Length: 175
Image 1 (tube, rainbow, N blue to C red):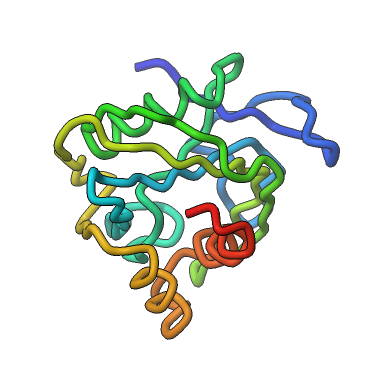
Image 2: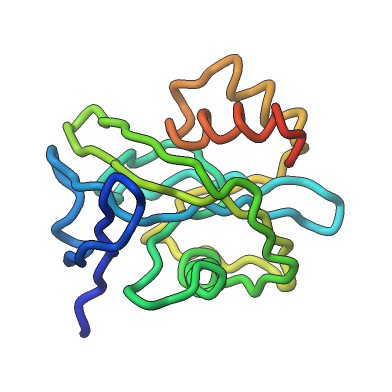
């Protein structure tokens, strides 16, 4: 099986190297390129997923539909479509960039750090979901209003990147 690599970045978000994805996330995670995607259904509901308990960082927390890392040389939109298939078994349509400047740094309770420049996308599901249990342990379709209220009331049960992204997206009325 080939090694999956992530793109390392400098402070100006320019590529400076690559590292094995399995080794990049630890207590001293370098800045690297990722992405997040919010998935909508035909009724305009937003998919939230609960990360599998086997995930290295933030196991068991609720988050946006899926996240990932583009491979070196892979276009962001292609990476979004690839990870949608891997994590949720879903085909996408209408992949739209919502926030090209999102960056975050967070440490989970185990000490694992996320340090990402992380453009945020929205897409529509073109097929039904068949989530990968290694990635997702539960999922639910909710209205944007319900999601924003839930994360405001209990931010600790949601991923820190989603909480920060929703605050930015709410200002722009983008979700």
